[in-house]
Each structure stands twice: as structure tokens, then as C-alpha cells.
Image 1 (tube, rainbow, N blue to C red):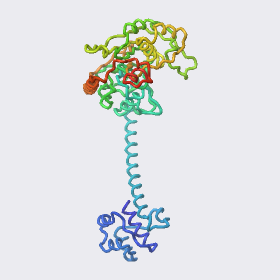
Image 2: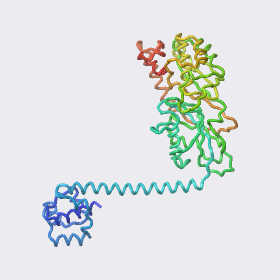
Image 3: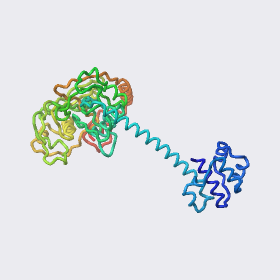
Image 4: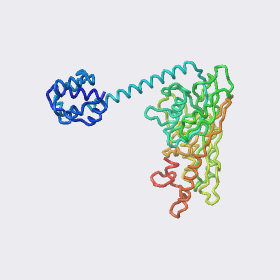
Length: 429
């Protein structure tokens, strides 16, 4: 197309009795098209062609004036702008050709994918997923971002040809985790392409969903098990219980006092004072049941007890928005001696939400969820690289803390966000 445009440009210049302007690449164009040397000289000198020379060019290169685009014919100042127009038109033409080829390839792929799914069986599959949500915008898909666990997981399934299109694909999830919150056992159910017929239930004959999906997932999101759960399964409404853990260092917290305070949460209560109201619900129900709550030692630091890691474990069937983070915030204040355990009973009875800072999302984990009559097909998942990176970072920070001026012993800033400290953000945001 570029050669045709340049040829048309020469004929057009002669027609208007204007001097030819040499353009970049003329020599290469003349060489590839075997243009006579004298013609090339005339082009470089800007001399007009004679009728005989135009006829010779027409016969040798099969050129016609119709090859010239209208935008060139309508140009008022051809000598100044035609070379630029030729370049732009050639680039646009190349882009159109490239785009058209891409569109043709995409159409072919879509047609092939539709044909594949039209001949395949779809089965409702539950995926057990673990992820570190620190750098993601939560679990559920959102309109304004693609950086969510569900979006990344569905795109991975699309790449593996397990679903036809990730866009608007319907799924159910066990528990919706917010931005920054992690999960060790999140269960998501969706319809995936199957290798077998509808009647076949032998997992050994099915696709290795765990390996397939993990091959295209980022390291901090892993599928650890799958199960063919049938048409009626819903991971949200058929869960028996959910458990969360919140990890924190002991520092100068009174662990025994926190443990005594947890008993006040056990049972069925109105937790409106410990949650963020969901304005989308017309008649919200704030009653939730806490079956179990404990404060446990996870790992002990024999050199400095303040650096020992503990966890708060909460077990129940369902939870309100931000309920656990608000409960943890109150327990921290009790552990620091800023509040009495009686404050929990007062908030549960009155339903009044105190103006406390909410605990950070980073240490919170959806730890486990249990279902009835679900047989999981588990696969070993290699986390060695992720562990190595995290272990090295932890060691580096501990070495940094060994310096005299770098400590984490004063944690009263847990409940004072105005103080700039390394401990203020990880726990109270």
C-alpha cells in the first residue's frame, strides 16, 4: 500500500505541475520496484515527469491515478503536507491490516471455543482456594477494578478453557473477604467444563483442576482442592460454620484479661454495635451466634516474649460486615487496660457502636469452613518459593529490630492512630 501511495503521489504532483519532493525511503522503494535510475534522479531533483515518462512508469508498475486517496487529491498544499499524509496513511493502513488480522484470529478463536463448549459437559464444581489478600481489592468482583481474587480466578479458568467467558460469569462463595483480608479455606462453586459425561463421577477420570488453574494463577492465590458437588450445591448457604483467625504479637497486651473477656461474646447477641451497617438491606438482622472464641499462642519467642505471636479464633455460622475486626479492636483495648471487659456486655445490650478505631485487615484470615457430604480431591501445592521470600523478609526485619533504637515494645499506639509508629497501622487502621 505504501508503494501505491508514493506512486500516486508522483503522478499527482505531475498533474498539478508541481515539483516532486523526495521522501524518506524513496531509494528503497525505487530499488524494490526496479525504478530506472534516471527516474529516481528526477524524483530527487524535484523535476516534473514528461508524458512519456509517466506512461513508462504506468506500464512498468501498472499504476493508475485512482490509487491516489481522496485526502491527497483534496489537499490544498500538496508540496508541504503530502509526505506527512503519505506516512500517516501508510501507518493507518498497516494498523488496519494488523487489526483486521487480529479480529479475524479472535473471531476464529471464539468460534472454536463456542464449538468446544457446545460439545462439552458443564458440571458444578467447588474449588477450595487459599490466598494472601494483602495486595488485592477483596474477594468479590467489582466494577471499578479487576484486581480482585474472583476476577483473577475466573480469568485463569477462561485461559484454561474451563469456562467460556469470564465476564459476567456467575459463582457462589463461602465468605466474602474485604480488601487486604486473606483466606486459607475459601470455597467457591462454579460450572466448569468437564472431561467426562454427566453420569460419570470418578474423579480420576476428570481434569486435574488444581494443577491446570494453578499453572496460570499468581503465587499468592492457590487452588488446593476440588469437588463435583452437583446442581443444588451453594457454597454460601450450605456452609455449616466459618472460622476466622486474627494474628498479632503479644507486646504488652494482657493475654489473660483478653481471654476472660472473650466469654462475653459467646452465644447469640445483637452485634449492631460491632459492625458496619449494610444500607442495601431493607430489614437488616444484626443477631449472630458465636460458637467459640479463644486467644491462643501460635509461636513463642524465647528471647523476647513481646514478640511471641498469638491468634484470636472466632467460630460461627455467619458474620456481619467488619464484625470480627471491631470485636478484635475492643479486645485490644481491654488487653491494653484502656477498657474493662464489661464494655463488651454494654455494647451488646445497648447496640451502641463506640467510636473505636477498627482493627487492621492485614492479620485477618478466613481460616476454615465446613460443608456436609463434600468429598474433596486434594493435590499437593508447592509454596516453597513463597515461604522462602517471606521467611527472608521476616529475618531481615528481625535483624533490623535488633538495633537499639528500633523496637516494638510500646504497643499502646495500637489504639492511637495519631501516633506515627510501626505498630499503629498493622492493627488499628
